[in-house]
Length: 462
Image (cartoon, rainbow, N blue to C red):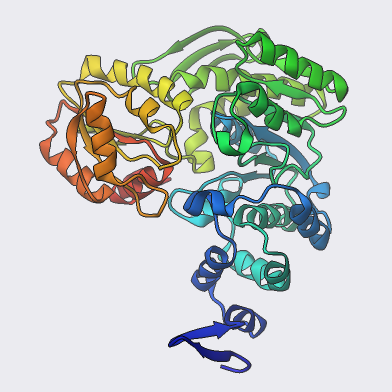
């Protein structure tokens, strides 16, 4: 290949400038482009701390290089410990149903990288990904942005390219120094605050709240979700005052006159502004998420955004089909009933426990397929697993996964019964063999465990 320099060092062939040469000569296809991304821009979801790059300077430089694309459309910024994915997808679905062309940027992906960047539910094209990386190769090689920094810039540029009217942007980790925090949104949302990524965001709720509050912009309305902590309530009130930002606490606003979770985990809502709504998204957390979304819709409509009642009803009852949302208490098989959920911190598992208790009352036996990343609060999560369940301890591919045997030993020390499996596929296969038609199987503990599970159930992929 022209201009590819080969060197032999210690018996190893090094392809210097290989990727740059391929892009320059239009040799790189989509799969090779993804290989390049993971090679040159280490991803936090794969490698953890070595991929974490605080600061906004690279994101600002990428944004300037692209001509500040996010200034061409309205944006809604969503941050928080838990719930931000549900909130982002539901707002995007509602705006889409109302006739808007809506970009949606979320992370991580479960099956296909292109899930991260969608417009009206349709994933970004392979060609745009290849072209975007190709034209920014010099910047990548020189500035070495993180994976998330580069993909965030790609999303913002794609939304301009496709002429969206709204883009719902989910923050990654934190808020203040998150790559997405270069936008000037029309609305900011912070869904919840609990301990997560303490080595990066701080080891107290107040410190983490400080990071999340970084998305509050001057004169931009902000919605705060769960807030049963007076110190955090006062903190966010003060931060909003400093920025002259109108603040709404979703649980204090009278959005719901009645809410009841159905036997399958879905919701029946009587709302004060929009009448009766049927909520497709399952689990106790969805009541709060719906309160946040209803508060957001009220702010948007008051500012002139046209959203019909029929659009709200359609979005609430069809959000997964409209946006491709997966992995949140998702039923992937009927007999035996199999549910997967990507919840991977203590806050999410406290919510999952309520759903597990509901299932325990209806099933004969519970099977728990569990894999957890090494950097999570493993003992806290394991302590929330029902003691009478049969556990299948496993591990996803990748260096971040807690080895299954070590996880099983931690579980046994906490009174859990089960055995270890070296792959998710083996754990799922064994659980299905042992489960009767009246049993219940749960799969989760890690986004990556769910990501490896879904391809085993093709009908569950949105």
